[in-house]
Length: 138
Image (cartoon, rainbow, N blue to C red; front, side, top):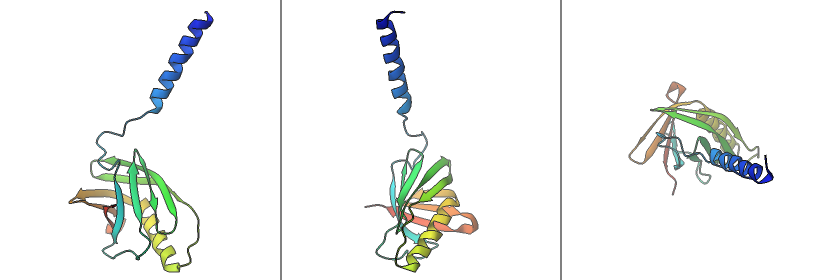
């Protein structure tokens, strides 16, 4: 095989590899590309001054849990939502109540099983009817 044919063949393989890495968002995923701020946790307002945020993008979640940043993966199937592989940075906050809220939020986030999306409100439901309600992030 000549050098020019090998070059063309390698260039073609590189182009295919590059295209394979470009994935479109999963079809049927109404959450992808949305950004939220926590409005209530089990019908109680979160602590003021440190917003808890949630963003969905192509199978990944991330945001601020009030003190730390967090990340994970998600999958949507009809009204089912699973959030897995949740991890977070490990900075300590001075306010113990903020750390408690953050721990409770991350625990509930990892336990989410279903969601509803209506009237510009996202509600996540975990076991024992634990609810996280979000408003669109400004």
